[in-house]
Image (cartoon, rainbow, N blue to C red; front, side, top):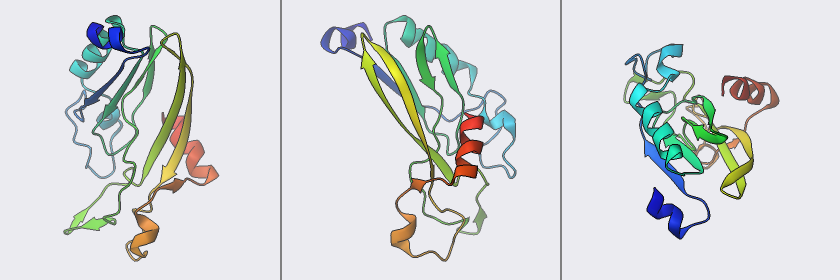
Length: 155
């Protein structure tokens, strides 16, 4: 992390980690809250990289949204869900959990290695519409107001 900081104004750390603190799998229907809490090792590692000077941490892997933590004035995004997901609710006879149909698109600007703000755009990728034409389900769309409020409250 220190080497990355030497070569850039801001270092961003990305980690693929889908494990939960409880060990609950994120494909259980309905999705239990315990599946949305990141594993302890994820929290320990993300705190350590911020302690080493990273300005922003993004964890990816979970197909559902997880919390955003502010640690030493730096954001840790534990999961924004999927950007796009077009397999439909029933994939190979597998019933996908509610919660996978939404994701979040995030953007930020930095000043002095600190994000000025994080802008979140809740997205709907139409997972629940199995008969929707392919072009309509391969790109996420900004979620409706009611769903946007629910997604942002969860984060």
